[in-house]
Amino acid sequence: MERKKERSGASKRKQPAEISAKSDKSLFTDSVDRAVSVNEVTLEDQEYQDSTILINATAENDYVDASVQPTVEESSISTSSEVLEISTDLGKFINKKLNDTEKRLILDKGPLKTPGPFPKDPHQDHRSFSETYYVSTSKYGPVDRFWICYSKMLDAAYCQPCWLFASQKNVWCTGIRDWRHLSDRVKQHGSSKAHTEACAVYEAWQKSSTIDKELEDEIRKEASFWRQVLRHGEDLSEEGNHGNFLSIVQLVARYDHVLRQVLDMPKGSTRYLSATIQNEMIECLGTKLEHHLLDQIRASPFFTIIMDTTQDISKVDQLSIVERYAVIVFLGFHAVTKHSAADLVNQVTTLFSEKSLDFKKCVGQGYDGASVMSGAYNGVRKQIKDIQPNAEYVHCASHNLNLVVNDAVRGSIEIQKFFAIIQDLFNFFGNSIKRWDLLSKFTGESEITLKKIESNKMVEQG
Image 1: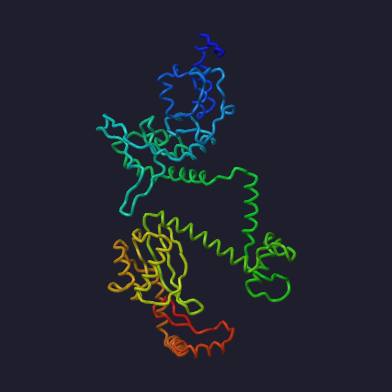
Image 2 (image 1 turned 90 degrees about the vertical axis):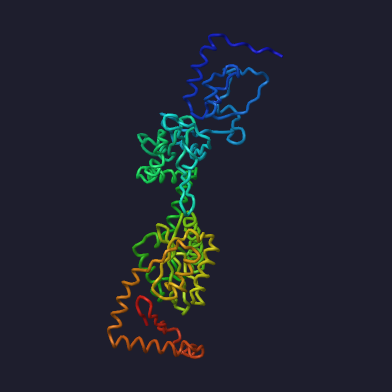
């Protein structure tokens, strides 16, 4: 075998300068450019290996000629099993202004949750960092502090979103070692305005995954166009009476050029205006929105429930359920066939089970003053309290204010007689299926129909 030519002394003396020049090219190619003989690795190089790309390489001899080392483009390095680790330790990037590529690599790697044990500082009563800072604990369960990281190289805690996207003057961007007051510093930083803004940018970067910018712009333009024309309609010809809704669509199209383009399309064109496609899109949007809201509720450490029933146009009581978790979301209407407190509670608990919502996180409940809802002994309020003792009951205060209208109506004898007659008529026809069918035949397609007068509702309506 042909013997390899040994390097000269001058060449070896130039080697540290060559390595230093190559290391400035990229923070993620150090171990490739610094791949020298095992016997030539210094103590500094050994310490540096912990924060660089580790690569499996083979050679016929132990000696590797540094002058023929491959660059990143020439080597067969991949981001799969050959690259064992890319460290995102803050100590590796200290005093370094990161570019977008480096930020993206750090984001893809995720927050650095270094496991213990951690070194104790003799100058701080032998205190140290702890893994308990990675989560915030409460009686409703743990909440992950995704932003807090620990640098093993600096023996310091830091905030990854602020490090990447906030002002570098913040101590959380360069590392904090005040173990004695770290708990207070963590709470203070977590609620600061600068941290909140940095986390918003951090989340936006995580969501942006489209590589082809031109294709992304085209998709956004197409989606924006159809978002403006999502309207209901089957027959949009210029002639004839289309009813109030379709007439409004025609009116809006006079001032909206995007909608006008859709209405002017010839028959057979894709317009997405038929009742079938509109209902399908509404259903898809509703399902997607519900999944999004449920994910937010599940991630919340606690929430409250607000519910009430009301009759729809077909005389079916609909139970509306609202979840409040810092924000308020409406989960939909649910038909009610039985009106006892036990039946309503069973319907709510069944819904929570179907939606994978943890009832133990419920810390509040709000209803009106009806006895079946707010009863202190057998009402929904009491039975929910038995299931979850932390679910405190709060009366619907705004409902009390609206009852002023109800009291004002009761102050007029004529109005009282009017509603009493309406209620008697409803009882006469509503208690008999035959009489109700007979009434329906006489009224036909008329929009006027009898309705039940609810004495405990906000406003009595006929």
